[in-house]
Length: 402
Image (cartoon, one colour):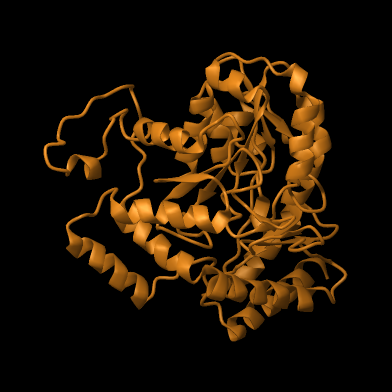
């Protein structure tokens, strides 16, 4: 069975993790702090905070901005549930909007229609690693400057709707000459086990706030907020006579460990030279062969303005139903090939549908979902396995729809 997306764990990672285990420092420490600096240099943003998940990063930034009951957060209906769940955790209302039929990303026109005086944050999602149109999103925010109602000092300092990018998929992607992480106010990456760059679990908040914000000062405040509200971390407390600390707020516990960070450091070192080129080759091979078939709607992986990071290969089959899509998936698995679907839209999930959300209010989202099959991509997927995946897809589609 060809798996869908196993992590790349080789001897180099094992050796570096072993060094950390033997160092006596396995929680948040020097490797985490160094990884944060390396991520900042790579992405070109102003400061970076590593955490134990992208979900924690999204929620922490909503809470930092003061999102609360009565507020609204705009997000695409086509995303993973985490994007909406963190809004619910803050007591705010998720305002779903439909997506662009070309690339799965949030529709800027639909964002503009959804903005109200209650809108505090827009959360675009870089689906499959392909960046959203941030110039257009940022322009919409500026256009609606006068609609924004600030409720606290942070919101008054920004003076407008916050753009908080769910960049869980898009580490290493490019948009108009800039990397993901430096495209808007704040971006949050995921380093989960299935991501291009993994730390087993984990994520990072890429701060890129405009003046007069001091991003380093925001970083320091977030370090406190994400470690119980404690004003010194364990590393600082190891200095001679520096044991005393204070709790300055009722904070959270979502710090990254050095064990996680060192995996990320190895991954980052070879990301551009090794990981991304291999993923690109796999995706281009899929497109080369599948483009010969009328039924194949290929994903947008690159255009004149953007290049994704080849996190997903979301193939759509033209003119089929959800039932037929599911039958095709079953056939592909019968050929010993694992595939997936990204994603079941959030309004289809029972928790959200019971609240009154209806996926049929987002027709492009449902259409994309009902015809989508994500093909496997991972570093060790060799050329022979790629051919097996392609053949399995072709034969399975032929069997189901002729």
